[in-house]
Image (cartoon, rainbow, N blue to C red; front, side, top):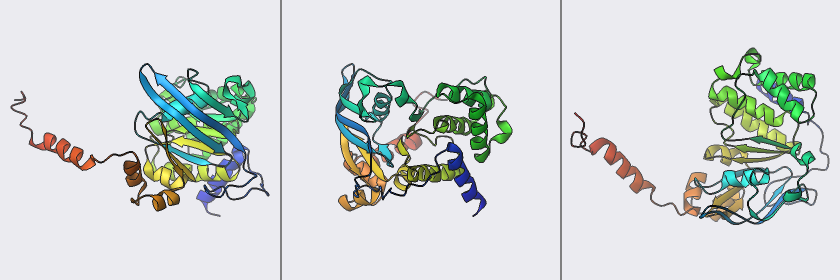
Length: 301
């Protein structure tokens, strides 16, 4: 086993989920098995912000072992969907069930089965990763010493052991993102929600995290992530859910989407299903304004 593979294996081990699922079968979209548990059920989900109707009757089921790439245009309602499932937004209509119970009757123990990495997070920047993650662990009922040791081992595998006791306010975007990802996994959740999870990470870290997501799914964890990185969605997801105009426009594996549409790339399929046909015109007009517009006539010396 190479060093990279060993690090990946130990990362999953320290999350605390390395166990054998002897009865677990393939979880690829289109091969549904009776042993797959339904963790989330959404029916006719609707959400308005003022006069803006964001979600217009969303229907979606999420199963154990899914790696769902949740994609859609800006403002399509991706982050809104995640925040509703997390209980952060309550002014919705429709039915949402999580772990077999209505979301509106959500119990505290459900929170302990969920991990979350928001797109933009306010961190206690005056703390060190040791302090921040120990505190986070206690919120999930983990003893501080246990949380601290687990956090150290996870960050060590992500090459951050040297800054474990340094304040977060001096960290880069990528370093902060690693701390947030570890905080979402520290309590060994069943479902992990991630909103643009790989923002700021370098190429090597992106490669490692993609494999970590895949291995977590093989251990029965469910990954639900929103991203505009089509390459990430294409290569990691076993289900791609495309949201357009407040509803699910597509729900399939990448291979199935390729077979059903004229385009070969996920970016092309995305544009086709969302009706975006103006790319060439926009690009040409934009560049024309940049390079050909007379700046002197615009008031510049």
